[in-house]
Image (cartoon, rainbow, N blue to C red):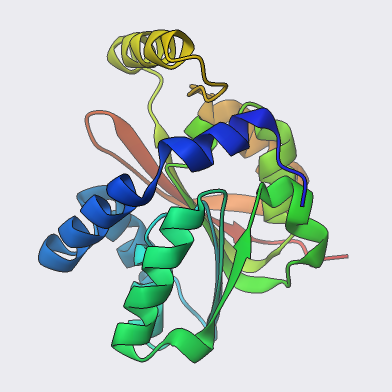
Length: 218
């Protein structure tokens, strides 16, 4: 399974230590505030949705929460083996292990082998991927009904944080970088894919948006 240098470095950056720390935080506090906003928006717009594809799923908060809310199946894709491992352990602990399919790698590389889902989510993933056009188009093609994203606002503070963060990543010698992609560009790609925005919320650094498919998949 091919994965670009950026994604290979992400797998090393988000290692077992990071994954275990985030899982401990999730177990003690539940989903982060913006993840909860995304989940609430998705559930409020749910129709007959019962499958979710979560891309860049981390410790699996979204699949685990939606399965707990009545979804029947989930697909979880991530470029970090450590995240996939801790998520699998947590799913087994909750009795969901036979309801989640795990895929390792860069989603744009494995997309052709990933099934459609009623709901597709990318929680703080667009900011970790250089080619937003490719990622959004590939992921939108898998959503039958809803498409939910959490990504940075275009603000001076987020741009400064991205610049400083990327300086650190460069100094450590890795290929991983973070990015600020415009909402206008993301929404243009989604419109072309047959979606319209149905909700949008903002925190100091992040924005949470949900889009509904208005044109049938071809």
